[in-house]
Length: 440
Image 1 (cartoon, rainbow, N blue to C red):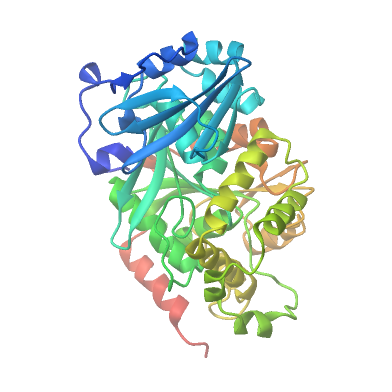
Image 2: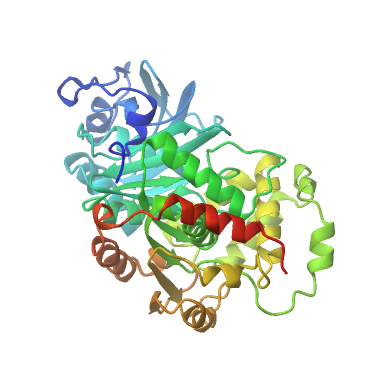
């Protein structure tokens, strides 16, 4: 069970009582602002956001115009948009959609999912603004925050109440890839999505290993910082591999595992392994590829880039990748995925057979990155696992959200954390010893 409620903000500062929650003063000057935007800004509460210093964002109400909002911790200012100043985030919608958002606390996420509201550039800032202006003062509201771990700062977003559930994104993604999951499962769980070290708005070390073990330690450190003793884990792609590693090394901290197209160790020959071992991730400190070429590659990889969520995901990928430390993290993590040993005493598939937490694997029949053929190997290695096959690609929570979230909710609710017996500590020590013991 959780030591506390798992609230990001509760872990970093004491929140004011809900009844006394203060709104942030906004200076409008003589700006003629559409009524729904004014309604939103009148409800601004920056305690739901997570930023340092100030934030500059742009609100576009078609066809009325655009306005820039400069937000600080103490106040905010509104003025007509200045085209020469590049905002950190741009939120665009027609006036009817803004009116709906202003009148409905939950309307913003619905409009975003439907594509009527477009958030570009920095999803963390854009969705954080929507969370700060929805008028919700409950402790279960959507909140962006950060927690300090011994290694560095981890950026998180959370909502809801109930058993803790931690969401772990994939390679090149951020916590934004799980916003739909957070919204869908928050009514039943206290859901927290994090940015892994090296990605999004979390700290970005240069000399970390960025392998599954490193990320698993970071996940457990985040649980500690949030005051959570045990949580269900849901991960996509690399996040699924990390969730498995937490389950293997820290079974006493895990309830159940939801694994969405998890990246798994290659079983076939890896002809490029010697070259990949020789390449150093530190080469990422130098941007060898022009930005336009990187953007073109990402859009070709994600041909459905007209989708609102995919466009936002491309923005999030580029936001980290186009920084030296973000590139190092991306290259290092990708390198570790390719080089992971499948067999032997410490091999992934050998260890997977000893996984103790119950697991649900969700596979995409059209997945080109983690082919559904892996399902047969998992069934043979881990017979206790459950499986769900969907007609989608590599990101089930975005491509088939209803089926994915319905399955996750049913699987996780079937085992409340209070009913799960912790793994004895001596069993944890035995597992760690077995993992590092040299083969006979």
